[in-house]
Image: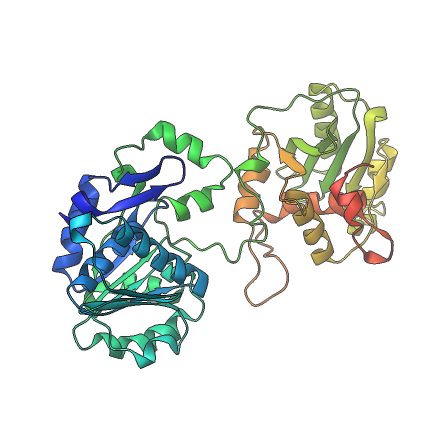
Length: 430
């Protein structure tokens, strides 16, 4: 009744609106009043924070002290602002004449009190709350220590609700969800498909600009980790909507990771807008250098590329070393007519250069990928840091294509004295 008849929300486009009477919100409301310890892993924008703010106010009207926690003070204060918004829009006949307000506290004379706190390990220690609402729980720093401080406050029978989208397999939110039955928690997943105003068409639009990992985490309630990804800057915005057709008037580049048994070759082109596109790839299997060269020429022909159009082909500097035959891979490529660049650099230098292309200072992707290059797209989404190391994992699966991309970045964007010239990164090719 309180939600249906008295609670208003603030829609970013529609303004003040009634609280929606969705079935999943009705069911969740009942569950929150019937279970003392509740964890809610959820999709984004499911109105759960509004529901919990309304519930906290409802409980405060009955008395007691109630805590709002979030990842920082600003976020906690935002929860209190929402409660004030709901309180101010209650029907006239229910208006409370004496309400003491401060920036971080709301006290209803003769009834209850609501306090907003940043989720720090000392914040809960001085309080004995009747209920606690912890928002963005998985994104709160030092969440395990905060929980240790908060847990004794709940042992007096207080209600607790922890709400968050997942943030990987770590932190107290993940641990409590994973071991919920042992710890006496009720877990209620709230998925975007439960909203009646969302369907597959909506999901198609919502997915734009998000990587598969980001989509699963933000909307599919996946606890899959992403903290160890080398290139989290790569998102759906980096992939073109359709296959790229090589423009014969614009510069073309190749880049090669010899890989010996599994060579990898990329083709890139500068665009008229000043960006770059990876538009073709060769994933070799047990190819000799000569076989790889012939495969490169075949893909050149398929894309109408002449050697004159290729500005340079970058490659691994180690390819200049003489092999058992007495001739280096670099020498064989040069003999075949390739214009080569193979500047040595630290791995991290190349990684940072690629990161600057995937997302520049303005948040724009200067480096795009044709959907046709599915190999490197798959690899970049799985490419991870080596455990307890400052270098990516050499897994023999994802590293070949990314090594080839790194050789290109180093030779294309290299600045004197090992410094990255920001203006050159922002305006590629200038």
